[in-house]
Length: 303
Image 1: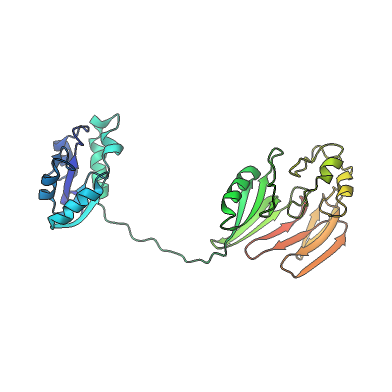
Image 2: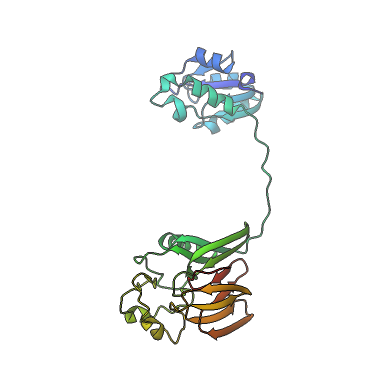
């Protein structure tokens, strides 16, 4: 059913819209088009008198009032409301807005679209936020009270501080793969910062020890300034979470990785399965219910 088959009610809103009744009647094909001046006030009785059949009413501000009047009239099968005031009649080009107003009325007369197919999913409340550190932390702070949040910082700034309390895991690296669907994503990323933020105690020993001041207070390492003096590695000896630039071969979950920045090796499966440490280079595989990551210490490698 087109707009020409509808009972259309339009209003100038106290003569604040220059509506051309005859032009609109020709454009819409509605021969019996009545233009009200104030159908929500003095013209309410006339509106109720004309209310019948399938209606298109060009007023959304007074939708409740006009809907009640139409219901009381008793002869209205359906009614739709459309805003022509803010979208056309009050615009700077209102005097030339007749085609747009006719289009808005015609669009309001279109049938409802077919319902979109829905897909069910189960959420376990786990959320991985990927992006620049400052933006990711902002969203994490907002969502952490309701969800189990993990932050993957893909672009860290020396000026962005880490949270004062460890309310959620924060790691840094490059997202290398994202598979799955809503509620069941598997993400894999490569650690590019030599300091593993997820297990770093944030004691600042490495920051103080670095002779080049290449480590920021958020534990991001400027590799261009780093001269591999290993002072930070020595300072972090008890924690063993800083990698140097010595090359090593290691295997992550059965996949060979050639690392070029690595000094401490470990293969770690997080799910209570195993924790095996091998000296020489760092490698890790961290698998959660919804998030899997491969850490190759920022090294270039073949996977």
